[in-house]
Length: 149
Image: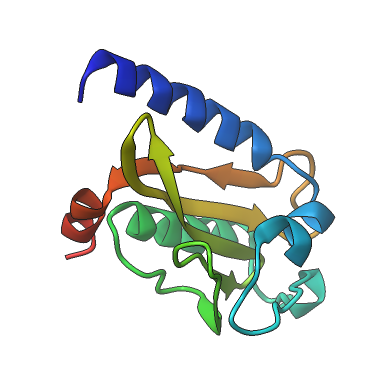
């Protein structure tokens, strides 16, 4: 990857990280996320089993986060079955958090590819302040296909 593309990637990563800090209402608004093949579910803390500890929630969320970075599906959360028409973004609900596996079509310079990675949002009342963590990376189609194998 040449220096110009690497600089563009870094700037886009920063922009994406800043855009992921929107409030929960903004991130669940279908008008800001694009169209989906099914209506989106709105998940909230009332769906969190009270028996889970904060440590268990963090462990499950971190494991799902790491799996997505490796190109795998989350194992501690479930999808509502909807896939967004932006390139394949899917939302999953875990206990105390939801994880969006972002896969959006995009370009860096004249290179076509995907912005891919996990966005975890904690919904449990025990979490205050910043409740979002993400790791979005630009991949060409070939790179993303290789990652997901």
